[in-house]
Image (cartoon, rainbow, N blue to C red):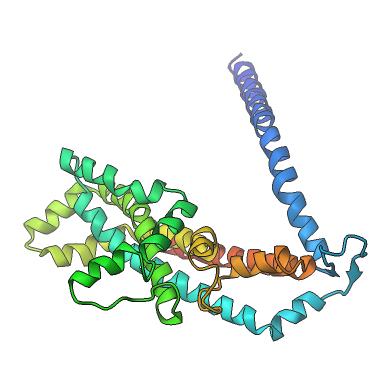
Length: 307
């Protein structure tokens, strides 16, 4: 009798698991169909188009199959090398500044008191602004003749600076604007990680006579390293995709000093109408970003194991 009841219970559990699995797939199916139509099909078509030479401004022209010609062209494209270098520089410098500043801001705002909540709310304003609005705002503020930044610097005796029209300062300007906008995001994520730290470890270190610097280096930093890895990964990938702000502020200029990869891909496809080459650039970009993401995820797993 007991064996019969156990068998009946096992059968009911299996039936319930099958029902739960079926219900899960029923809920996921509309989303999977939507993503397949809006993401997978365009990606597959881009892969197909990358093997052809197609000019969008010639409506009656047939696509010309050139195999790997578009991919081979990348090795001799000097503008592509410049834009890739600019994007890498932008990503590394901006993410490094955002993580360093954001972590210290998070430590300052890691409190449940009213003043910390008010400061956090005010601090989030740059992050919730649209990138186009941010680019337009800072383009006006950094204008060499009418911008408020040069106007304020004039009170200190600093001569007018051509922030966006000089190759020496244009990249610095777009990096600082990106840092200004996204430090709040990094700070919020880091603050959540800091609040999740076990208080007994910090209290024990304080009782043992550890200084604040030692507590930060030996306890806090290692324990939130997985969170920081995820933050760096998300910001690094997002920095490589920057388009709106840079497009509005400089459009890749002056010259090609702030030409980023997304902006270059856009120009190839929608300004020079070279659809095949633009598709091949986009495919390589997606592959590189996928490899970078996988590397960051493996690094995070190793950090969690060591922790």
